[in-house]
Amino acid sequence: MLPSENRLRRREDFAAAVRRGRRAGRPLLVVHLRSGSPDPHAPGESAPPTCAGFVVSKAVGGAVIRTKVKRRLRHLMRDRLSELPPGSLVVVRALPGAGDADHAQLARDLDAALQRLLGGGAR
Image (cartoon, rainbow, N blue to C red; front, side, top):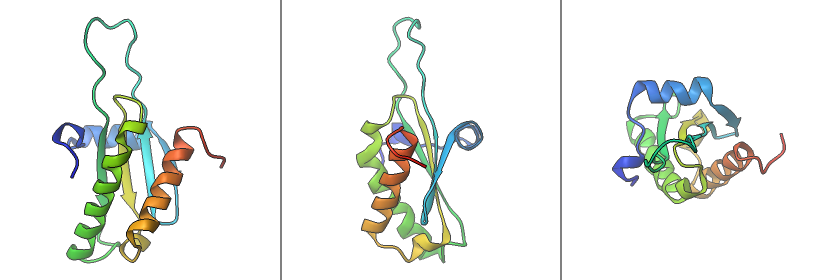
């Protein structure tokens, strides 16, 4: 489970990540990342936490399948939050094939998308 301070909840935050962030698509999911760029001249405050949100539509499957996909993605993302810049907003959108994928396949696609967004992968 993601800690409370790392959950993306507000519609405006989802929109900011999707509209103003970078995107990397994989066969099972699309990851949107809006990097946090804390002001180095800002007094005192520490960097805001990285937040992640998930979009799993009915195209993925029924309620049970969607919930399973969300749980898996939350678990995978929890372990990867430390790799992202502080203050980043991440939205992971599951594609229809994600309902049939196992944990390892989702992890592989998530890692590849994050690697690409963080500058480590080619197009």
